[in-house]
Image (cartoon, rainbow, N blue to C red; front, top):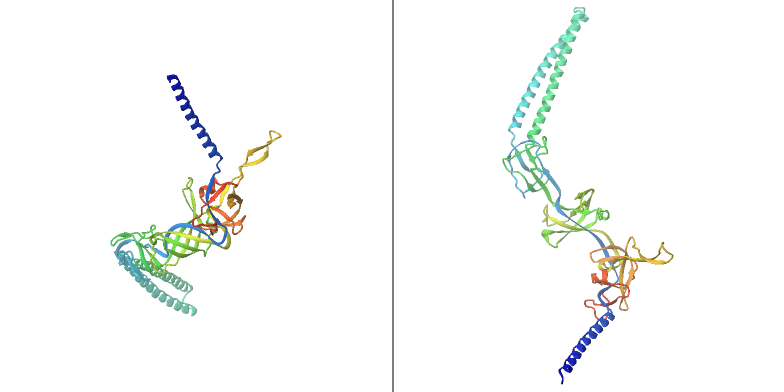
Length: 425
């Protein structure tokens, strides 16, 4: 066979193979383009439940009753019979400050008082003598045996003596007050516990010099706390504080005790805002809330980190769906008249607020429905309008609900444990 014919035959075969491959690729593309996309979803039926709205806040554990001990006098600590962690009774000695200076001042004040009393006694005796002389002169004057000048001189001397006695008496009162003040300072060198409790913080040591609060803020010596009555002090976001009320029940978890829950009651709500990061993008405004905790075992300690779930509202027998079932969608297009022409044009128009919708499964297809919602807990959200009990709504996946699903989309329900039907409750 001539070589030219062989080459032509080979070319035909090569082009035939290439053409076949091209036709196969085109057929696959057409077949794939015509294939309907099926979205896998999970569903759950609308049911009536009890829903409790919870506000979560973090903070610290502290004693409900505690006293910071600061001295009122300045001096050296000469006795410190307690240490941190000790239990003390009401009136128990906590600290003693060196009292030498105050003892000396006391003795000086006592001596001054005695001197003032002696001076007053002397003036009293003089006044009594002058008073007797005045009475005698007055009697002689009545009998014409003493002149008017003698009577006036006796009266003047009596008034002077009485004034001196009153001054001496005033000095006695002043000396008594000075002594009382000195004794108060002396008594303050010994500090007793104002309540029965535990020394939860001790900031000083024996021999250390402390400053009295009369000259400055005073040295923070220690803190005595009643650990039988504890509370959680948490910060609640400004958007949630309006729902929290005195008496609300709270479940408090403490990091040190794992999943154990302590039951508490909201006892105080702060009126002053606590703002951090002022003037920045991270600015946060919170309000302090105190929760009285029931701790019969008395294991809680001040300063422990905690998280409080405050139950602010409970609704029973309300229609509800899983929280992931509800999504927000915007109607991006609407028919409006184009003012630049006489024709009606389709232009983009965004709503101010998106609709809350859920997707139902009807005949193997997704159907959106606008709903109105109420309160929610960790898993379910109340539906106030738009659904009826027993209807089947899409509960997952999040990707499908938030982005993939649209009206008419073909879905395949893949509920865990679902057999013949999708009656998940």
